[in-house]
Image (cartoon, rainbow, N blue to C red; front, side, top):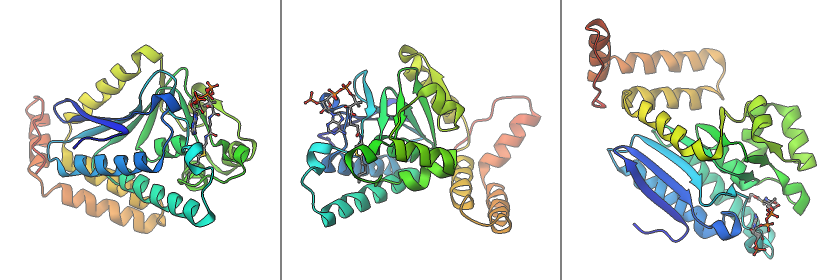
Length: 261
Ligand code: HXC
């Protein structure tokens, strides 16, 4: 499938890269781009060979500098709500993709861009990346999940500060705040993302899927129910050939070869 506003490519067996491709507007998300992200995400889900998805922005300036202000400028209240709802649905579907999804943040990561990155499983960033929720500068609220995912990641006080001042924080500060896992030199970022992806490709796909699902579902449950969910996932992992292979490989002191069943 060809996309107008993104590029989806398989970099190496099992490793897919989704690039938001509107560099002339710092990869701002218009409605067509949000639809492209959904279609690309669905295409990856349907591909049984897909094992990791990396998400980045085209060019050297921005990951995504937010939703497209030009397109939003004349929206009515209902159109704004519908854009928000559609983005929330698409980002949730990206978040729940049953393979690891890593945000590779290579520059400005603002508003809807920060919300897109937070819908990925974790974020790595280049030294020139900046994060923020500057919607208040435009007289609007965050609309693609910022008020909800940001406090879950960095806590209430820091979220209040970012959303109410519109301040941008550097990649280093974002790391200190727990939003970003690792910061790399700009020229190294994609190589580091690939190294991580290659490592993940060697793991058991069913174990990855169950682990991700348990973390996502469990984080909004009470501890007893969340731990019960974990024990069921753990038990289910013992029904796979991968579990037998993984443990046999350990005992035989060799590398495991997983087949995802
Ligand atoms: C549309 C954008 C854009 C955006 C940048 N551009 N961000 N266009 N929507 N969000 C365009 C600019 O208009 C400009 O186009 C080109 O990209 C380069 O931007 P400059 O401003 O010239 O670059 P620079 O001076 O380096 O500043 C970079 C920047 C700034 C700090 C990222 O562009 C900026 O503040 N952008 C807006 C950030 C923002 O407010 N994001 C939140 C949006 S609301 P031209 O044609 O002039 O060259 C949001 C809500 C999400 O995300 C929820 C929706 C439901």
